[in-house]
Image (cartoon, rainbow, N blue to C red):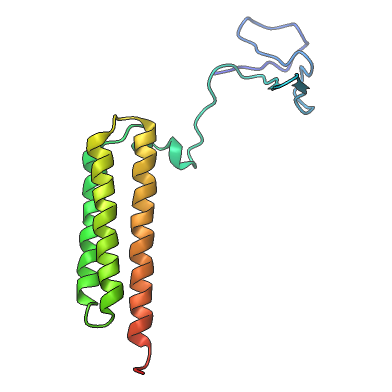
Length: 153
C-alpha cells in the first residue's frame, strides 16, 4: 500500500511516495511526450489494483476452473435445448437453429477447456462463449415466443 503524507515536501519517511512536480496532489498529473511514447507520472508504484467491476478482474476468469465452466455451460445448454425441443411444433426451423447453436457453443467451450492452458486468456474465452451462449438462447426464445403469438397466416 502506498502512503502519501500531506506534510512539508521532503519531510516524511522512506515509505512516502510523492509526485515531485505536484507534492500536494491537487493538480493534474503531468504527461511528458517523447519521440514515440508517452510517460505519465503517477504517485503509485507497482501493478495497478484490479477493478472489481471488470469481467477480467473476476477470479473465475483470471484462474479458470474448467469443470465449473463446463457444468454451468452444460446446464444452460440442456435447459435451452429442452425449451427449443418443446417449441419444435411452433417454429421448427428456429428451434433446430437454436439447438444447433447450443451444441456448437458447448463444443467450443469443451474444446477451450480441454485444449488450452489455465490462463486468464482461457478464462476470458470461457466468459465470452458463455455470454454468446446465453444471448443466442434468449434470442431464439424471443423469436419462438413472437412466432407463437402471431396469428396464423
